[in-house]
Image (cartoon, rainbow, N blue to C red; front, side):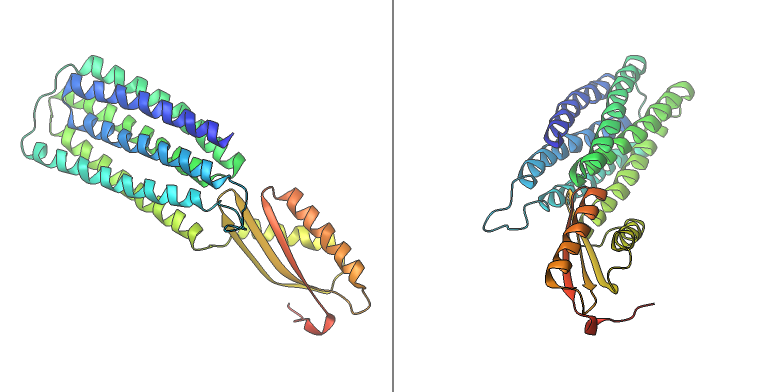
Length: 290
């Protein structure tokens, strides 16, 4: 499913790039050129996401016993870097035009073509974000939000270029291009930040950890004395939970093992993609946490 969504992203990105390049050639607008340059990043990002997803879904092997899921984060980091490069290229094109604004031609047809590209991108963004959340894929989710930001900036560019055509204020064209550059620069830094967090084994969100604690307490039903040293991390579409379980001294090894199996089953059913590791400890290790 994730790979199919990534292939669709690549095909749509190529089509949208062609449409936006045509819109630029029809009008000569540097703002529309900035929109097209961002779409070249979309194509590269879609390729990276496709390769990363293929690699990330390989099963564990002798050299990667925990799997290859972190490969998706490398895709998202590279995508963020590409976004920053695109922003710099846009600024390079827009700054000279800011000093010497030029009238635009063929705006009617050019804007219609660009609008069609934006509508395609909007549908793609919705699909990628939805699939990324369902499949717990950072690469798909990052790609989806990247495409969504492209849609929003394209909408601003279309409105601004249309206004420039109506008013004759051609300086709006390079100004809009620079605004697009600033927006995608921010987006690039955000993508890198989120992906580096995954590579650094950043813990799961507090709200999700809270739900896990509640699930553990309900499943235990007072059969254990304490749960402590609970840790979480995320790696691509998989997440990991480990904690220490303090059991009464009267509990046999077999009973403790059965309790752990039950906890693992409940947690993995309640949180798809979760891998649970439980360390059983005797009553003497109780920390008596509040």
